[in-house]
Image 1 (cartoon, rainbow, N blue to C red):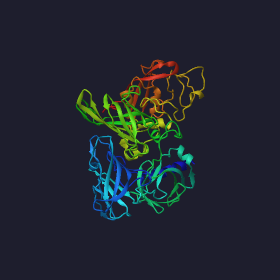
Image 2: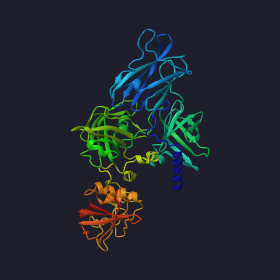
Image 3: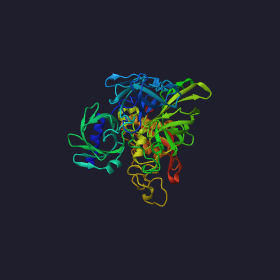
Image 4: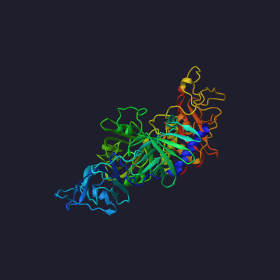
Amino acid sequence: MKIKIKRSLAMILALVMALSLAACGGDKGKGGADDGDKAETITLGKYTAVFKGYTLTKDDEGNDAMVLTYDYTNGSKDEQSFAWAFMFEATQAGEVLGSPMFDEDGNQITKNYEEMVKKGQTLEVAIALTLVNTTDDVIIVFSDFDDHEYTQTVKLSGSGTQDSGPEEAGSYQLYEMTFEGDVFDHDFLETSGFELYTMELAADGTGWLQIDGRGSLTWGDGKITVDGSGAVYTYTYKDGMIVLEESTGESMTFQKTGTAGASGGLKPVGGDGSDAELTAYQQYWNGDWYGWTAYSNGTNDYSSLDGFYMDCMARIEIDENGEGALILWDEATSVDDPRAGVTVCISDGGFEQGRLKSEDGWFSDGDVGNADWLVDPDGLGYENLICIEGSYKDPDDFFSGYDYTIYLRPWGLDWADIEADQPDGLPDHYDWYLSAIQTGAEMPEVIGGDYGGLAPGEIPDSQMEPQGGNDPNASAVDGTWQAPVYGDYGLSKASATGVVPMTRDELVDRIGFYADSQIGSAPYDSLYNSMGYIHGKPLIDDPRWDTGKTHVYQWSIESGEYATLVFEVTDYSIGIEKLQSVETSPGLLDG
């Protein structure tokens, strides 16, 4: 059975390779989306427009016309108008439509189109179109100067509202799958990390499939075609369940979670996400986040920061009114003395989860003001990945500063979809993170440090064999107690070789981290975890080894390159050892 489970996963991953797109940095708004009874959001770069509906009227020459209303939000740092951010061309029945300013009674019907809007502010804008008729769909193509594009299809119903479209249209989550005759049910998929595999079918026949990467698709008449790969799948729909079937008979069943444009797979907060009292805002934003910060455009004293990056952690708490705070710390700061502390609020922004907006606070010792941060949910095209962009100005030197970009994902979710598209888009300590979440550990307060919990195969303290007290020679892996044979082996074992199945680069990354920032703080357990749950070789013949005071361990790779680490035993009675120094084979950490 285990073989077949792995093969089913391989089948999904093979599908991923055919479907995945490099979503980060791509056009977010291509193709009409959200053509359902949910408000449609048009996004071009840092600007958004939420479609509120339309009315029919007559233009100043007596022709049929429509007036469309949008809530326009300027997400850039510069004051800008809707007319600049959303250039458009509208057609109907193959003819280009004009845009009148007044109706037949001389009333102005195009409003606020060229009005300048400050950063973070929202303004209602109305644009008018002279119609060819009052029955055919109106197609509006919005574009900007950066080649972003969005196509909106407005169906003329006479009421100014959009019909809900085909019954299949909506958001879905993977529910069940079959492979080689075996059925993997919902419980298995949910506990195996497949709950974030989602699909969206928009009412206009477009959509996407998210399986460790997002692939666009077209659908209709019982078929789904995946763009790029050209793969075609048949589907059947009944009672909110849609079954995708390959010609080989393998299938995936998706369950409907909402109308087209709704978010499938909101991050659960504070448990299993079943707390009905949590708002959609709180479900998405609240909790612990992990990722990294990239620095760029450093000037004067900060020019050396260009290209520098550090892993970071964040904690977000939003109340039921959409108000709260965010704190962020990194490898050089701590949760008690964080890099950033910002009061935030949630604005609608056209998103079910809302948009996170800064109100007041600081990053390093620089100010973060109202709307300096505008953070969209899934803003880079990856589910549950957010991006915070900001600029720091030295309070004592206006001409010195830098830009920063923060990438965060909820603690507990892997980054496999990003790794597939952009291997350089992972946090530096992603291997440590992956080991931590695989044990089910909660987010610790130190990046790269001991995350608590149990490693694979580790025995809880309550199940350790009692030996009349706390013995520092206890093995945390097999639950047995190792009596000294030729001497005291600290927290390691007499039989430990310290040889780890790593590449040279992997060893350099792990040891380099501890040498750079963890001297005096990292416990032995942290190294043991980071080295793949392999004990260091105890160097009891090293002159620095002093039983109960100083212990020396060595980890190495098959090539023979090694790292020798010296620990101070700070509390021998309970086996606490903290890193004091790092030595390596010649050249290992050079450069």
